[in-house]
Structure formats: C-alpha cells, structure tokens
Image (cartoon, rainbow, N blue to C red; front, side):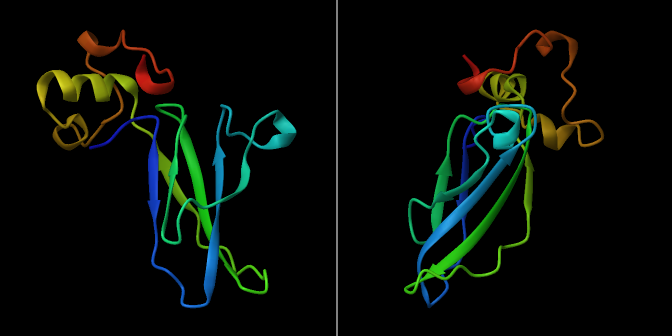
Length: 127
C-alpha cells in the first residue's frame, strides 16, 4: 500500500558492502539542500538492503541515490538518481474512499484532481 509522505528504497546488496548510505533531496520543502535551510544529504541506511523515508511532502518531487560502504570505509560510486514524485493527498484520500487508482484510469493527467477532490490539501501524513 502506498502512502504519500513515505517511501521505501530497496536495492540488491553488494558482496563487499558492510553498510549503505542514502542521499535524499527534495524540492521546495524540508528536504531541500542545506544551504537553503533544508536537510538534504547523505544518511545511514536502516538496513543492508533497504531504507524507509518519512515526512516527505505529498505532491513534491524527490531525488534518491544509494552508495555502498566497504569494511575500510570506502564508498562506492553513487547509484544513478532515482526521481520520484510523491502522490498528492487528494489521490490518497480518493483511493481510500473509492478504491480507484486515479493515476491508472487518468494516465493523461494523473496529478490534477477532479473538482470534488481539489479541496484536499497536501500536508505531511495527509492530516
């Protein structure tokens, strides 16, 4: 099940890695670059093959990268950038009310809400 303010990153383990780091950068919210007052940057991964990210702003775009760290503390090359646009809160609310995956049935413009759902605001955890 999806949630518009959370992400789960999963990767294959590298045989020489003892830990991983995850880069998180958002656009226009708390995950903006530090020089703009945000907390974007590298973070220790929770597990050897995955990392959960919380408090993402629904509807915003994020970049993620992964890098492996070996026993000597040497980092691998960064992974390619994985770009994600989080689902807006109205999409999450609509799914729970109707069971419809709006992005699948409206693939031409999946992020524009129908008029009856336009009032739902994007907030952390969609409260």
